Image 1 (cartoon, rainbow, N blue to C red):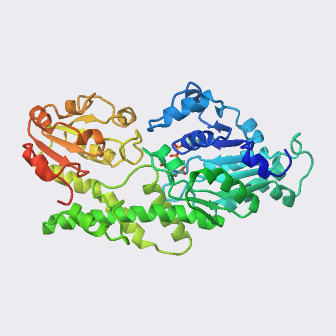
Image 2: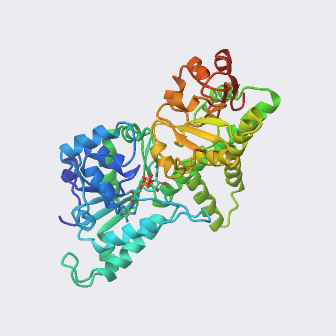
Image 3: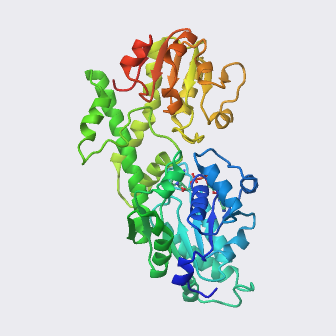
Length: 464
Ligand SMILES: NC(=O)c1ccc[n+]([C@@H]2O[C@H](COP(=O)([O-])OP(=O)(O)OC[C@H]3O[C@@H](n4cnc5c(N)ncnc54)[C@H](O)[C@@H]3O)[C@@H](O)[C@H]2O)c1
């Protein structure tokens, strides 16, 4: 292919795409693009994941994803491959969806992103658009560019694809970097891929813009064109703001308890104001998962490096850290002594419709309950296998149940830690009959207090 991408090739979806990183973002992106008609290769350094995908299975649970995976393995439009370098050389558009975990100081660890940039540099055999989808701090795209320039020049001068010495400006003309942050939510990733509220494209070349605009055109949502740094900052700002909403309403919930008000009605009352809105104002045991906690810390760190003390966000984090203590205190107040008591725990995933337990609040709560000597009966519709790696079933202190009702059997209290729909459908009369003592401690406000009390429970929830 010449060092250009032509409008006709784009329209005919003849431009080969690859996705680097077959995780919670990478797989929905890859099969979503395949569904839009593109031919997509998927790679991961974890070859076990590629093998699983080849067999037509998923390495994690995500609604609707299995169907799309099966469909596009069959259509041949999605090809998982171990041949990373070959896939890079064959691809024109490369979506980078690798992990950006946090370091001990909160800073984003960008070593996976750097590794990918160096690999792309070694295989720069024609024009490539490198699309940064991973969540990264501002100026990362500039670093990707610099890295590719450095390593393409020095590292591969004698390869057949890149013979002889090439100048820095020649290399620059062979690739663009774009920032296209991902906003999907686990548990609804497929829905979010096809129905995003907006797509943000940070670009600094017309070619990059034309390619991304064509790829996202069928999605019929606003496509915002910005510069690279702005696009990167939009993602961190969005997550920091969402985290702020959650910590804010959690503090209001605590205040509601002390003054005798109902936080759910407060949310209704403020949410009707369009300047506020009702979303992301669910009081509970705090936010977890792979995004909000680490992205908040990375944003605080970024501000600090720039000489700004974003103390507002430090407080957001502190409030969130305390949520598990607030919840454990409620359990204590309900049960008095925990030692030797059987406690049922419903919900382990950090949110419903996923098996992801990364930074799930349930982990700290389980640790706290075990430290007090409680005997736990745990149940989650899909996250139990992951949780077993942290809390194995040993010594009779931790038991995983195959049904929610089994977790309630003989329990002195039943705790709700994730708002799975399945829990809302429970027959409360049956739950009460199974329990030793009918106490519900609801960290997600799944039930109306009157409903739970009418079913015969002592019912403790958040902010009501
Ligand atoms: N999970 C979410 O809900 C979500 C939403 C929006 C944005 N993000 C961001 O997207 C990025 C990916 O998140 P995720 O949840 O998909 O992570 P993940 O851990 O599920 O997946 C990342 C994948 O990248 C692979 N990888 C690492 N280095 C690689 C390399 N050199 N070459 C090929 N593959 C490599 C890993 O093996 C892993 O499979 C992160 O920056 C995250 O912050 C995540």
